[in-house]
Image (cartoon, rainbow over all chains, first blue to last red; front, top):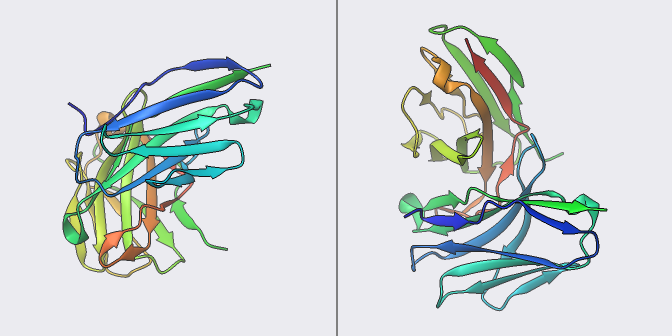
Length: 112
Length: 116
């Protein structure tokens, strides 16, 4: 079983729709969580951190469910420019034993 | 401007010809890492470094070497490249807190390598 798993998609949704995807992680001791966005053939960029209390940035909401070991990303009122691959990132361990683990990404395509 | 710079951005080479991909960051980050990205496989970590002179293997280190002699630079060395190392490579850096990377990674623009 992969340490971090995502549905690869693609999710193909109309502009204006709300879309959500999850990412599950296997290590219950994981301590930090993030969502990154990657456009085609470009470098990944940090979208947002994910906190236990949930956090919102404009149309984007990220949530962490420690009991079920998943994080989620919700995009409201989706725009054509939201088309990208969304990567979840989990950090486990501390100091020299820490690991940054990337999910393989979920492709999102917004159609007009 | 805060950035991670990789060079070359594109390279076509032949099997066995040693090459180095440079990576430099200007943010005084302790943590640096190399990834390769292949279709359907996502980002896979090759090597990482927690600080100067401290490097460790990632998930796919075979065929690669790294060094961290200075904080800002983290070159990736392919001593004898093979066609299965054809890939898109990313360098990334991050601050650390208490020796643990924060996870807020800054990536270079990527280096597309083709080995014939």
